[in-house]
Image (cartoon, rainbow, N blue to C red; front, side):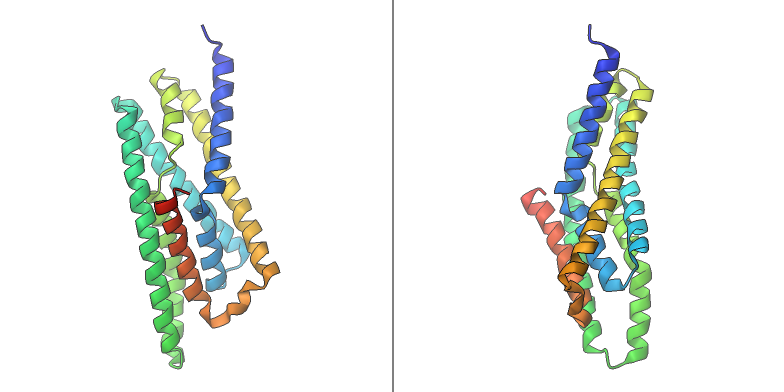
Amino acid sequence: MSDPIQTTTLLLGTAASLAVVHTLLGIDHSLPFVALGRARGWALGRTLLVTALCGAGHVASSVVIGAAGVGLGIATDALLWLESARGELAAALLIGFGLAYAAWAGCKGLRARDDARSHRGSRGADRATPWALFILFVLGPCEPLIPLMVVPGMARDWLGVAAVVGVFGLLTIGVMLLAVAAAWRGVALLGAERIGRHADVVAGLVVAASGAAVLFLGL
C-alpha cells in the first residue's frame, strides 16, 4: 500500500511543476498584459493587478468545472474534452479580440485630429480592456489542473484537492506576475515604447499573435 504522505507530496510537486511550465510556455499568460498595459499607458502596478485578477479567474473556472466533475462522477476524459474545447474557443476569441482592437486603434488613428472624440474613445477602451481580458481568461482553461484534482477527488480527499488547487493556483498567478514584470522591463530596455501612436495597433496584433500561437502551435 502506498504511503499517503508520499503520494500527496508527489502530487503537490507535480502540481507545482506543471503550473510553472504551463504558465511559462503559454505566452498568452503574459504578452497580452504587457502589450495592452504599455499601449494603454498603465503603470506596472495596474498591469500586475489586472494580470492577477485574470489569473485568478483563469484558475477558478477550471476549479469549478473540476469540482463539479468529481462531485458528479463525470469521466476524466469528458472533462478533458471540455477543457480542450474551452481552450480552442478562448484562443479563437483572443485572436478576434486582438484583431478587433488593432482595427479600432487604426480607425482611431485616422480620426486623431478630432481630439475630443479620440479622447472619449480612448477612455472607453481603457475601461473595457481589463474586463475583456478577464472574460477571455475565465473562458480559458488550466488544462493540467483537472487531472490533478481528480486523483484526490476520487478518494474524497477534499483537503488534498484544496492543496492541489492552492499550489497550482498560487504558482500560476505568481509566475504570470513575474513573467509580466520581466517582459515589462524588457520592453523598457529595448525602447519598444517609442512606437508611440502606433502602440495600440501593435498591441492588438501582439494579442492576436498570442492567441494564434495557442490555437495553432499549442503554446
